[in-house]
Structure formats: C-alpha cells, structure tokens
Image 1 (cartoon, rainbow, N blue to C red):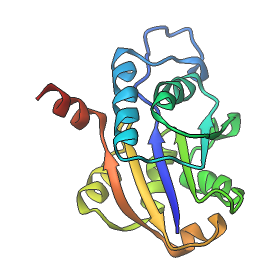
Image 2: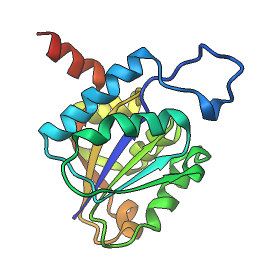
Image 3: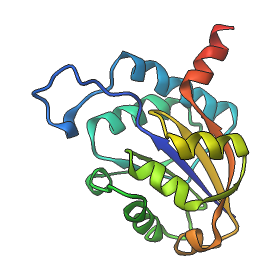
Image 4: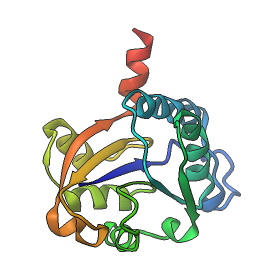
Length: 177
C-alpha cells in the first residue's frame, strides 16, 4: 500500500506587486494555517518517507512551518520543476519517478495542479473530502490518499481512496473552542 499526502501551500501575500510570483511569501493567515496543519499531521502520526516541495517561496515557507511537527528522519527534496507543474498529469509524472523505497510521499505544491491531481486519483473514500476538495482545494488543505498499488508508476492505474483530509479553517475553529 502507498500513501500520498497532497498539501497545497498556505495562503500567500499579494501585498508587494513588484515581486515575481515565485518569490511571494506567506501572509499572516498562511503563517497561522501551516502550523495548524503541522499539528494535525503530528496528532495523526503521519510521517511521509519523502517530501517533494515546489521551489517557490510560499511552498518552502509552508514546509518550514510543518517540519517541526514531524518526529523522525525525513527525506526532503525542493524542486523548481514542481512550481511549473500546471496540471495533475505533470505532478503524476513526477510521482512516477519516486523509488519504491518511499511508501508514503507528501507533495507540497500549487493549484490548479493539486486539485487536478486529487480529482484524477480519488475514486472513493471519505465522501465529505471528495466533495469539498473536488470543488475547491483551498490553501493549506491536506488530502491523504491510499492505494493498493505497489509502485508509484501504478498509483493512478489503481486509483486512490481518500482516507483523511484537513482544512486549516476547520482546525483553527476547533482550537478556539
């Protein structure tokens, strides 16, 4: 069984219009959302074998804010090519290249590619997650997909079951209560 964690970067700032899109940082909401997802990952004891992160500043900052919540050794790869992945097919091609030693992978990337990959792969499981994330994959949203595939090259052919999801706004609301 393989597990894929899809994490869209946290909310970014549009304040400085002179910045190139690649260099946009997280805004205040993003700085609150990413640690909320990090805490959720820790509570669930999710620990990916490999993290693949877009090279854009907002994805790297999201990664930096969730990393303290992981216990254990992590392989992390920051890849500029993931920033240019504009659809799910491009992300899937990258997943195909993951070696079989990694049984769980986290992709930290951008929309529309994250939502596109989710809708390509998710064929069942949590109905609320399927409905919510197929309609909109918000910033800092997390989807957890599992597949009976034995290699990443087979992942799409087998399809995936949505076993969990988290949205930062839900997590932050719970914290207030």
